[in-house]
Length: 168
Image (cartoon, rainbow, N blue to C red; front, side, top):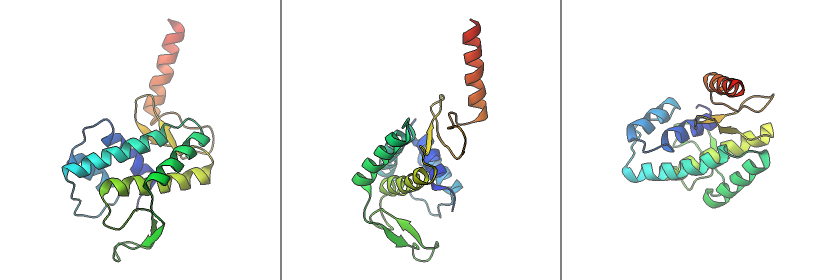
């Protein structure tokens, strides 16, 4: 199983700019270990996009307090009581806060991602990610200064633009 926080960021980056195709979403889900078959109807894509909008707001939080408030609100609205599942023996026991193993895709995305983001925030005592200047969400895994960009390329672009602005 891959990092559910990275999975959340990757799905937000596919779904929020929209409209995402079922193929694009399947590709991300496969890359993060989701077992086949991955069946996505048009309604599923709409639900996933709505879930991704909730998650993007969490990534956009500027402070740990704002991120915690956004997570608490999302969990209060979407999560069910915690339960352990193996998905009929397919995976090791793990925690879920969605309604069932057959929960709709959007419910699964928002609840599983919020749970993972909440654990990350509690562990690191900082927002679990951010939104880059290019518009992509990213995961902040560091210990030092808070990450501000999705990649070294975006950080370089921002530094070059700032340098050119100072020289102009």
